[in-house]
Length: 88
Image (cartoon, rainbow, N blue to C red; front, side):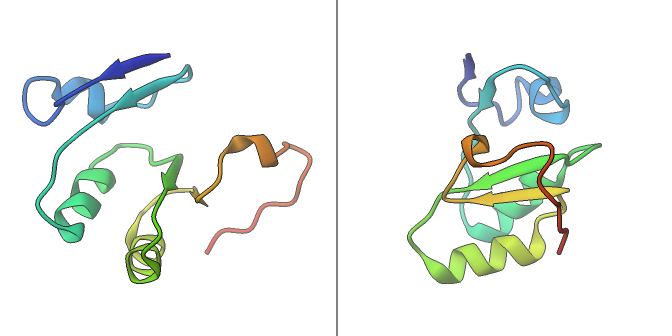
């Protein structure tokens, strides 16, 4: 896997593209609304992950992120292509 740290300005192309291999880009943000805006600034928005213990943050993010799939406190290990998909 590749890890890119502090991607806010210098590495804008890395955070704007969708990659089909393990990559994590880390960005800093001041509040949950800014984090949502940064996350939604993607051409495709195929999938996202939310890891939090804060129910209010999770609810806000799941209702405001513009992604095809959103995993909450989980990962792909529980998903299989033959399973039914529901988009909210």
